[in-house]
Structure formats: C-alpha cells, structure tokens
Length: 508
Image 1 (cartoon, helix red, strand yellow):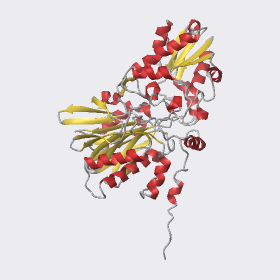
Image 2: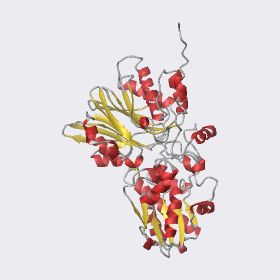
Image 3: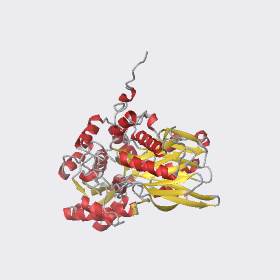
Image 4: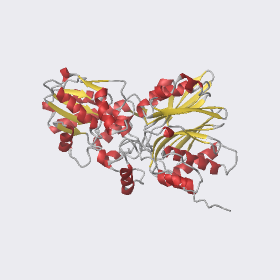
C-alpha cells in the first residue's frame, strides 16, 4: 500500500514529484523518497518520516532534471525501522536503474536465492522491492543479450520476464539512466496504477501514479488505467510506448482499496471510490434493518474520515439523525498503517476527540469502514461510553477481516485479526459494544462492481481467504506468522544472512 509517482516533464520535475507525494501521503507514512534524472545522472534523496519531514529546501535544490520518480512507503516486507529500505532503490547495472514499488511479492525468498545463486546479484536489504529491482535489471540485461543497445522491444521483453518470475502484487515506476521512464502493473491488476498527460507550451508531459487524485491535483488529465500486465515506457524525448507483456492478464483490483486505502476523490479502474462507499452504506443499512436493531438507534455517527460516505447513506435510509460525534486531529496520521500495536492504541485518542453532547443518553450507531485488529474500535467504543452513551452499536461497511492480506497491506497474521475465530457476538464483547454488524461479502462486491460492471472479479482475499495468484500456501502464511514481530513486517536479518556465505575457496 505504498504511493508511487513517475513524471516525464518539460521543466524541472522536483516540485511536481513532491506535491504528488503529499497528495498520496495517505498511502504511506513511514518513509519517502524522490529520484530525478538529469541526462545520464540520477539525483536521489530519501529518508524515514512524512514527506514534509524528509525533504528540506536544500534537498529539493539538488533534485535536478525533467524526469523522476517518487515513493512514500508503508512497510509490508522488510523492516519499518530501516532507513536503508526507503525507496527508490538503485542498481548500476545494466545502464543504471532506479525503482519504486507498491505491493508485495509472495515469492521474494525464492527470488532472493535465485538472484544470488544464478544471477550473481547481491540484495542488501530485506525489502522485496529491492528484489524486484534486481530481477528487472537481470531481465533487461538478458533482453539486450549482454549488449549496450537498449530498445523499447528489449524493455518490454524484460518486463515479460519479470511477470514470469515474480509472484504477487506490484505496481512499479522505474527509470533507466539516459533512456526514460518505465511503469508496469502485475498481471492480475491487484494494485492500482493510472497514466495521465498534460499539454504544455513546451510539449506533452506524462505522469503515472497510484491514484487519479494525484493527476487531478497536479494538473494532468487522466488517459486511462494501466492494464494488468501492461508496461508503459516514456523516453527522454517524450515518446510514449505501451505493450501488454503478460501471457494471460486479468483485472482483479484489491477491494480494500475501495473500502479504506484510497482517497474518496480517486477513481480506480473506472470505479469512483466515493460512489462505491455510498453504495456500501446503502447495503449496510439494509443489513441493519434486517437485524431488527434500527428502532433502537437514536443517532448515526461516522468514524472519520473514510466511513463518512457510508454513514451518511445509512442515516438517510434508516431515517435517523446523522451527527459528527468525533473531531479528527489532522496532524495525526492514519492509525491503521502505523507500525506497532501500542503506537496505534495511543494514537487513536490523539487522533479523535469525542463530543459528549452527541453521545449523552443516546443509543449510538457508530459506522466504520472496517474492523481489522479491533484496537481503534475498542478505544472508540470506550470513548462513546465515557461520553454517556446508553448503548453503543458498531457497524462495519466491510465484512469480517479473517485472513492475511499478503498483497500489500500490513495485516499478515491471523492472530492479530479480531474476527479470526470469533462471531459477531464475540467481537462485540471484545470491543465493548452492545452489538456489532458487518456487511456481507456478496453485497460489498456488488456495491463496488455497480460502479464498473465490466470488472468480473476483485481480490477479496482478506475476507474470503481466496488468493487469486494461486501461489499462497498454508506453509507460506505460517512462515510469515512465525517471523512476524509487532512493528516489523518480516523481521530483521532473517532473509539476508545467507547472502554473505559465498562458498569461496581460497587458492594458494
């Protein structure tokens, strides 16, 4: 769930990339980085923290050139505390390549070993993005037959090689020194990627980004979503090339993008995020009516911000007052993506303050987009009771999250998920609510698909346990859970230790 931006412009690109990252900050708060290209040279600055904290004026001045990529990181593989795992990553062979990646590779361990044993490449961190970069670099080398001439055809062959070797979810922006910008999307289209253009006095400019809101804000017009398995290449002269590089692509967007991850003013794969959340609210209202709880509800209150569209529709359909019972501190980030359970718990009350007047002596229906770990929900229910609520009902616009999402969201262990092994009554007890109601999966899929009926299937693995890439085994999930530490997503050095065992023999 990282944010990525790539731009080929006719003027300095550093400010465009910075502004793009700030718009996509909701997709990752752990680290940020920008790399620009000036001729055959790269200029890079990256570090841990929010975009505004990573970049100073002196840093921006050093990011020269009219082409560049940018990345804001949400750690799903590797270490949340590692500065070295900030992106973009760089390799100097062949040609010099930098890469930023949104998603998660499920065969990263296997690839890491093959890179070392067969490709003779060294991976310095536990980040699967560095693995992906080295796979791409090796495939480009092979596509050029070891020569020094690079063509669009060779690059597209290399991306095809990446698709054959890599398993999982990935949306990628990369730059090749002295050549151009490359972007591609995994063959299942799990993670989002969109391309736009701007016609300026100096010529056409192109952008690729995780969400359409970045294009809107930066003054680009949406061309289209990058297709699953497709590669987009823009050379330094501004020529655009596109090629389908996967053998059997299919579009399966991650449904959690629409539930929570994306901004409501984005459009992903032809689906308005805002409209899909409105639809979720209408279906959730039907579920509440069917449960028989509707007559007991005095007021409907959303958990800001992502649940507001759903809560408004719930209140409207139930005929109940809609009230803003929680005021959000805009200077506190999204607690869901914060590394560490204790930090998430502490930050909930820093982020939200309850207004007692909206809770006192009332039966309150709290509407949230989803319940994952239950940390936020438990604290919010407690805040409502402290403000004098008689009863607190909790409704989720998404179904119970019972399975790990291994494609790029940090909920990899079943033990962390409050819905694992619990029914609605038990979940209500766990978070301190009088009742908990969930949307059902069939309704959720129908709500999102209603905005684009052409999409036949979504990745719903965190709800139904069906992993669409077909390569997520029980052993794989058990391995992730065994290695997980709170606040880390993969452990410190477990994957890299063998890299130093070169098996060399001394010769007299």
